[in-house]
Image (cartoon, rainbow, N blue to C red; front, side, top):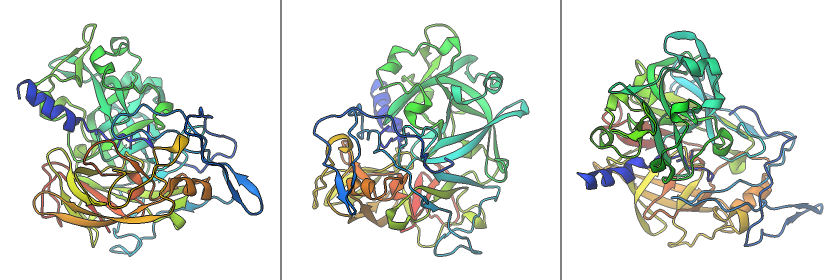
Length: 497
């Protein structure tokens, strides 16, 4: 989905609607390099034609990315299947930065893989080699039955998404005996299902309770007990039929292959995925499926799908994502860290030089970028690229043919974003914008590409997706929480220059 955006902007869309009644992906937005024996599914050519092949010396013709069928455009636009990735030897693999006590210029935090509050993250070809999508940030998540600590499974290639809330796993990616052991979550005694709209599609499935483990050794560092999660495409008969009020919200994502990930780990700025709007009203989010057809119902905060981080016994106020700088802006694979907690201990102290942006109640800050005032801007690891308006002081040209959802400005650009949060917070960021066609041709084996960007159709919006994260430490402070080193409460985001 896009380069996908599994940012969940539901709060932005449902709160005004809910208020009118009586009052985020970005899926977007894991191990191993590229697969030399697999190629992405050949897409269908669309108009305009693909840019002619690039000729290099000696005269080997490198075909530009193959045009694909144009995606269903929600907001922001969906970027389609990326160009064919041809493996080369040796692949470029970027490991996490070397740590020094108290941090170092390469890694401004003191965390290391193996700390109980640190989970490895990675950018690679993804779980479906025939359809690789660049810049998807993955983690492995351990899911266990609440009453049986040995009935567990580690789900690899789960998309890390700071633009949504809650863990969502495709049913067919979970062992049958584990799925059967996860009890149904209820509200008022009624079993729940959920329909959640992301920028790039909509998920439907049951809500169940599970124990979630991440960090440390073998995902045993942190544990969130009896946490409500969504089981996407749950085969249970009572949720087999997708309600009409859910179907109209966008394309229903039914398989992990369609998403390019086995699930979504929503660790954004909010504790619950719908919040107070769903406690009073019954928007098409939560459903009771005690009888067919499922019907919309209001749901208490405690019964909603929640941010797994708040369920940890400590280090539960937010997170920091650290990804390395890429050589020449691209790599076959990049490895980094997801650090739980923000300012709760020495290894997650706010990195030196970090800017803090306090967000609105919907998770936004304002940005002045390329001569435009963009009041609904946000940072989102679930969106795989940067999305911005194409017009401004510098007009950003779109690529042609099947990669028209990327920018092809002809050369690399650096454009400054001057950001303003609430409560007097601000930051300035130089944003790299690369020519997508040139980047794909120069590094056809790359699954991590810094500076990929494309046009946003959402008005007044700058999405800082995964291509913004390389070479930075990016923090998220959950709504209502505080952190040492931050002079504002959540919701808030932080970033190094």
